[in-house]
Figure 1 (cartoon, rainbow, N blue to C red):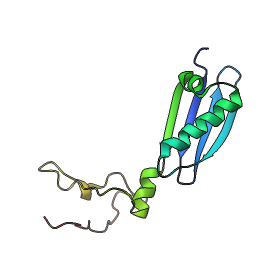
Figure 2 (tube, rainbow, N blue to C red):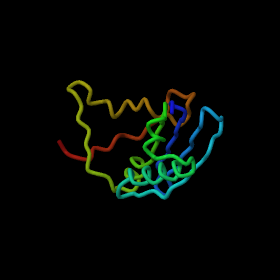
Figure 3 (cartoon, rainbow, N blue to C red):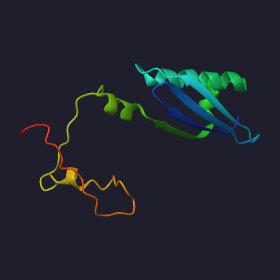
Figure 4 (tube, rainbow, N blue to C red):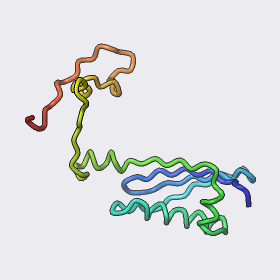
Length: 126
């Protein structure tokens, strides 16, 4: 069996979604498994087994015959929003303390380059 599958996985808080493209037949199928927040890998395992059962092959054959697998997740974002993640901090190299202020990654209006951001909040006194 040559590599013939392409697989996309989106692990969310409630469901883990899968899309599989069979490059030989051109068939594209969607699958859904319940997410397992305590161990997100279990939902992926369960979903891969669902797909393998549908295709009539072993899960190991499905994985070994994928030439592309794309995985996305909201697990980190959900942990941040719900304050359930591990304690983290930001350590900056000397001279780069303003990195948090630069905020190049976020603009309310993508075509405006002069937004007024609120001042950064110092969470810990140094």
